[in-house]
Image 1: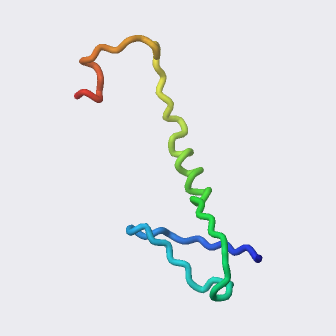
Image 2: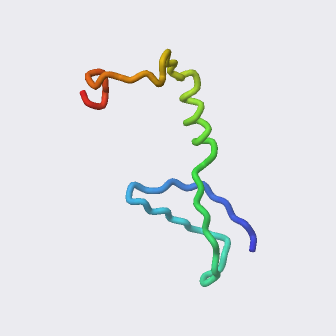
Image 3: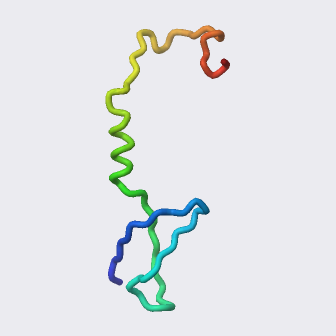
Amino acid sequence: MIPYSVKKTISAEGVLLLEGLPYHAGEIVKVFILPQQDEIKNTRSSLKGTVIHYDQPFAPVDVDEWEALQ
């Protein structure tokens, strides 16, 4: 079987349409869906340099200071 690669975008409905494939009707194929690696690297690089430093990371926090409760 000849490998075939194509870059597509999944629609808002979660549909992925593949047209013009180099295979014959009725031929059984195996489909792998992977996120594009370049986009994953860009996501990680956007966090570069945003490390927060905690002076006492294991010190208890008062309930009034919890951002999640506000």
